[in-house]
Length: 308
Image (cartoon, rainbow, N blue to C red):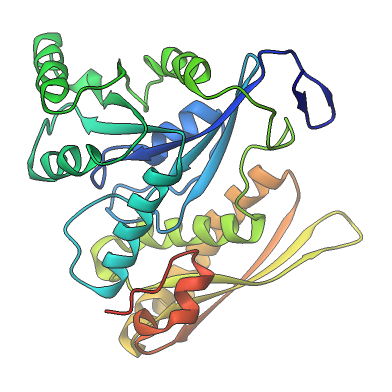
């Protein structure tokens, strides 16, 4: 009989890693959050906001599903791009199951076509998940499912809207039945293995992108410098936002510091919701030239540094 953390579990206990792969903006992070029932990964309308593998943990019946949310797969150009794509595919190869996400509206475009071709080499059962089904008519969905399965035979096909929740419960049940038999790997009340310091940095980074849109390049990062739990039960957090040029620092600060104050207020509110504590958040902005070529920065983000 398998045992879970904290006590005995039924004989049918199942547990496995499920990698979600797809093109940028296909909705992987939103789907992870919908499956878990809580926000565990950064969500943004801009592409490339998930850099490292961040896991969401789902309990469904007697199964524990560990979701691996990978960076969107695209044609890499810069060193950082190559690191993210490499991380995405390593996550797929290391998992027990692989969910290939397609955008119902985009269909099998160039990005999706390349992913389907490369996913054929992944030696695990593959599941097709067509997301954003509320945006297209049923006939188009059925045609897309047929075309994708002709390109790459899938063990199962699910149609969902991660945003509205349609089909998410069916997918959750399907994954629970497909992960291998085995004991739970995480405590049952744990939703993510991303350290809170990292999650807090991701939240602040999301707020920066939401506020600045196209004004700030993606070569910006946030690091949590200190996380102190105070006697009154509140948390004091200090974070540094790193940019590559002084002009970018001025954009983040805004006139009279208005932009950084707004970013801080939004991030503090969300971190407080997740931790259930009063949060004191202090943000600093520093210039770190060419940080995109610094191996230490990649390690901090959970990425392997590409040597070429």
